[in-house]
Image: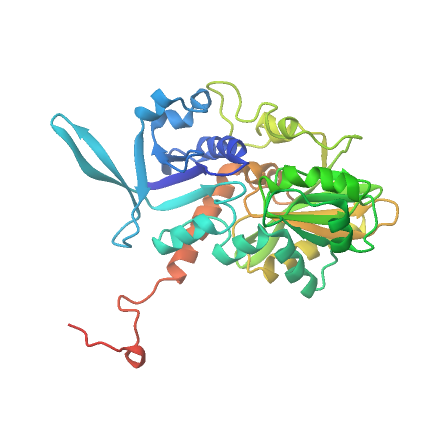
Length: 401
């Protein structure tokens, strides 16, 4: 039985979404195969572990609850098995202790968790971890960097402008914006460059409106991304992973839009994780969480030849970024003209996008998807091991003792 440390929470505007996804993952992991250790990173940055962190009613923990949890940190020594360092209370004081584990399952969304920062920590500690590697995570959580790389691969993207946060304050005047964006046509869609989950996304009709919404974006991000507003908008999302050396795609989903942008709480809080005592993870088809699937969406809609086009573009993006894990790729289309553009890639989609895999041509259950991600983490980790003495003779400047 492998010990799996599930890491979630974090210092991110998407902290709460990560908690929901983390609980769903812990419920979906097969208890006959895995011993699960919850590792919650609070918004303060402190790491905790405790059995109560698997219960929804724990969140957000109070000061009293935190006081009864064990604070932990990651051992960076690279010595032996991965382990969490902590202290144990004894009758006469306390002593250092450790909690060994085999694989880290990362269930972070947004900043300092999905963007390569935490991945670099696990690389440094020599810990097997799930999902995209450090470089790919950093690139894909930067929408502008992703666009530049995908453009080179020949996959269609929307035109865009980059608006950096001012060095002082959060306000950019309409006159300053006009000079930055030139003759870019309105209406436009403006969004944070590094955030997800629809946070800070807005439609603007002119530079005055753009100036008004930017301070909210700059409160969380140092860069805003401006794109044309796509008329007759149709969104299509598909997840991608490797299987037996091949790149495979999930079901395609087509969200049904109302006249309003999807509300953040509607998107994530409509039952995600279930009521107290309910399981959020899906073990069999049709038992998916209430949360993400409560949205109105079509799975595997009739798209004609566009179906394979989207899958081919998704696989091309995934390989261009040397992808791993099971990211979700989002495409947008003008339903009238039929034009399709790559929009963005989510390295760790909410709930791991398990409902997309359950509805795939070859269905993969949530527990099975996690099995695959854990196996891939072990394989990728083994392939990156250095010799015990990593310094070759030709590069040695000091004598060995």
